[in-house]
Amino acid sequence: MISACATSTIFLPWFIAADPASEWERAAEIMNTPDRLAENRRRGVAYAREWEAFEAGEGPRPEKRLQLEIFRALDNGSAQVSTHTQFYQVVLMTVTMAKELGFKFFIDHGSFGGYHAAAYAQAAGVDAILGPRMIATTRVNWQWDDNDTDGKVLGMAAEYQRRGHTAIGFNTDCVDNGAFNITPPQEELSLQAGMALRYGFDNPNLENLRALTIVPARTVGLGDRLGTLEVGKDADVLVLTGDVGDPRTSIEFVFTNGELVYDTERGDRRW
Image (cartoon, rainbow, N blue to C red; front, side):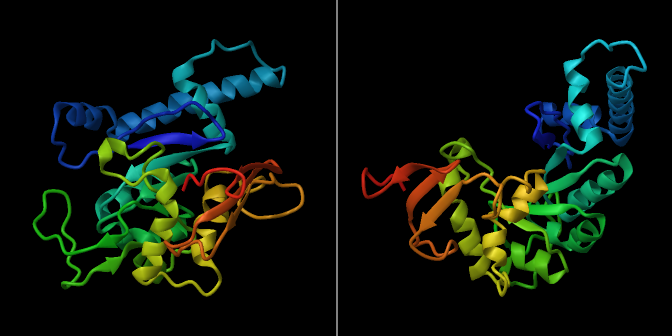
């Protein structure tokens, strides 16, 4: 699935299906063929240009169309396209689409054999926000992907890194208590970082911390506000008991816009 996100609150869902298993997936596959995606882009960019002309005083006010509204943000770079995708062939298609459609894309998940496309993603400027699956094992003659690891258990982040990818972040694929009870809750994001380290992610320059902070912030266009402690940025700060990738680490204090909103010394520990 592909959805436009970041500074915009409107989502444009696109799906890339591989051997769809349901009628819903088959419909999504038909709807989002390369030709249809190209046509959606053409219509969306034309819509964005109409609004640009109006705002510059060079044309009439266009009729607002919510289906195409996201293209205004995609066209000016204030929104990005999150591709919920995995497997080598499909991740490679993400990179290809980023080049052909001309929008800012990033990989969301990138699992199974997706790391085989890491060098192409790096060259195309497509960031990799990985998780929740943080390992890769051999899968041969599987319905969607063949990925032979020679019997090894490989670290997903380490394999992207080994192939030259430098913009690596982590996600849990969840914003509640675990989607369908099969994905980690958002509070376990640091566990993704710990698993990356356990399975070989190289960390000489705090790459693990950057994968939870500045890399995803920049990926979704918010690097000027979030991701590092700098004068002028939002004062959103966590105070921890140890390394962010250590599962034994706990959160002691949370500041939002400089205001203390969570204090374990004054209230019950939530996590």
